[in-house]
Length: 360
Image 1 (spheres, one colour):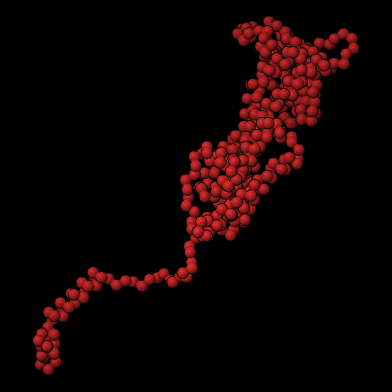
Image 2 (tube, helix red, strand yellow; image 1 turned 180 degrees about the horizontal axis):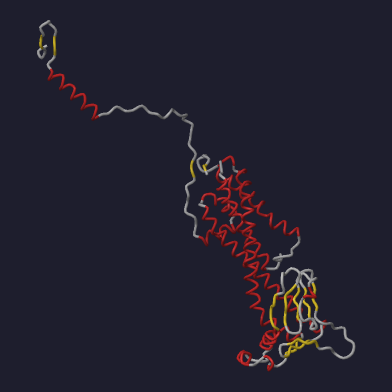
């Protein structure tokens, strides 16, 4: 009452200074200690535990990772924890190594029939001679069981016929290597037009070098019509095939490796696409996405590609022309391994430490 004033009508009024001071105090208190806003998070059950996400560990170095994927099936399932690139590059290595193994083993095995053919030439075929770049057949006097060279298979034919000047008479053969009087011609119905492979003058030079009859320097400086003749028989053919074998293996191996690499890429893409859905369906209880399942499918293909190459290298399964049953087993094997890897992944990721399911 001491600080109040009495108005003319007898009512009490506090001084204006006192009211202004009180408003300043209240404003300062609200600024220094703002009220706590109500929580917007709804109450949750105390038993609720959020899923634990995968910690993306750093993958091992590429060489070690490649070897582990070859020998440890658990690593196929653990590929789900790493980025896709961690499995992609070992898969590229496997495709390249597998294609090289199969391609070069096929080319190396292709030389063996040629060497066997050369060793048995004198028992079946008439000898021939190359002179001045022209081929002629040596016919012995009297009766003989030997015949001019002709080797035929369901895929290709090798024929010597010095009376033919071209290849138009051989258009019924699917694929044929024709030795006429002056040229070696590759022709047949599988080719749109005849392909000149080698003049026989060049073949004469190569056979002289392989048999040690002349030096490389002399071959370059001597005209074809001055070169010594070379007889084609078992001994000269064996020397020739032994000399050209490394070049044939390398050239044919590179071509075959490129071919098999393309085949393996197509096989891998198909199997990864198909088995990814299998892996995902088996792990649906842990919510595995399809892209994670594809990582496991990629990891499964790595040992299969290397195994296919090793089987060809050791001659257990040929690179081509194997039985239909072998083909079926080899090319459908990823399905079985993907099923195994999917079950391993479910065991590993559905019961981690602490009993909480992981979210992929």
